[in-house]
Image (cartoon, rainbow, N blue to C red; front, side, top):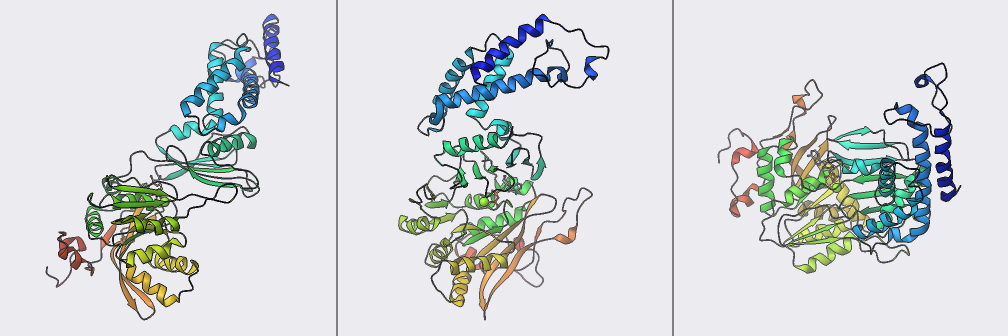
Length: 482
Ligand SMILES: Nc1ncnc2c1ncn2[C@@H]1O[C@H](COP(=O)(O)OP(=O)(O)O)[C@@H](O)[C@H]1O
Ligand SMILES: [Mg+2]
């Protein structure tokens, strides 16, 4: 049925219903099964919700048709990246007004307002997940097909009762999201990883790759970056460790933050970056801009995936190489996950001290072997021993972060890389998470990372560079006097 027909019908239905006010049957209507008829009953505003159902069904259909017409009339203009959000809104609102103008007699003011709102949210916004994204307490929205939507709130993942109408509805929202940032998703390129205008990160993957239905993952951009105080307040690290890490950054150590997905690597990298003196020239390199530098002298670079024809790709590696010609004092790489590992190590070994990055690994040792693997995969045909030596001499410190069973993110190791002994890279923990402290009655881990008493070799550097650091940071050591 076309929109016009539908409007006609919905207009025709009402007077009929009103003209024949069927008296309620002997049983009270509230207990009768919900009517499946599309005829809207003459419902007073204070009627129970169930009685109002047929009406909202009609409204849903009206909404579908309105959208259909709107799409037909505006078509590609909806995804025109040259239009600003305001221009788009005005255009859609105007069009929408004229599309539902015909319906005015059948819709109450309230219904009309709701219709406009819902259509605007679907056409311009993100449909049902809009409210989740608007909720500041939600950090991540995960859509697994049209009927299963999960959110992350205070570190915990919970299911919501929000749903899309169907797969097609979800797909239209995904199309809109990726279309607005000039990307496309379809069977020939069924996955998109991108950054939204507001800095949020979005990943979309559709069938046939996503077997359980189109899947959308949105990591919301937190407008106020977490500070070192936040991390201390949440027990992710303690004040002594923060003091040490700050000194390490200022002393130009090469630091790798290691952790699993969503453990807070980028957040910690951000915090470490905040310790870089504002006199230095910083170059950040990322797949999608996440690092938020407070300093003024910052150049931000972002890689670019290939376009639809497979051209124009600029990789992290290209950017790392280029950044070396930009006279950086510091290179901060969002995450090493490919061949750029080789360039990063070379940079670290050739005078670009103080570089910072993150890597996906489950322990400091694992981080080193992952670095090795990435370098070997860069295809330079380097002998393993040479690669290992490069790693050992480039990396000074690994900060391991983990998400514990209680949902909290904690720094679990701060580990110094010392050098090579035979075939092995030697390392020693300066801080280690105290698992022995156990958990409280809520399952919350009571421990935190405590100093091992090891005084790292680089502590010498602090003294040389005039960076004060109390020896007590490293914990009490028997027989050792400053
Ligand atoms: N220490 C922390 N405590 C609580 N939440 C955190 C912490 N660090 C990060 N988060 C939150 O966890 C999510 C993932 O953080 P992010 O740094 O992007 O992880 P990663 O880079 O490891 O994937 C974000 O929503 C962030 O706000
Ligand atoms: Mg990250």
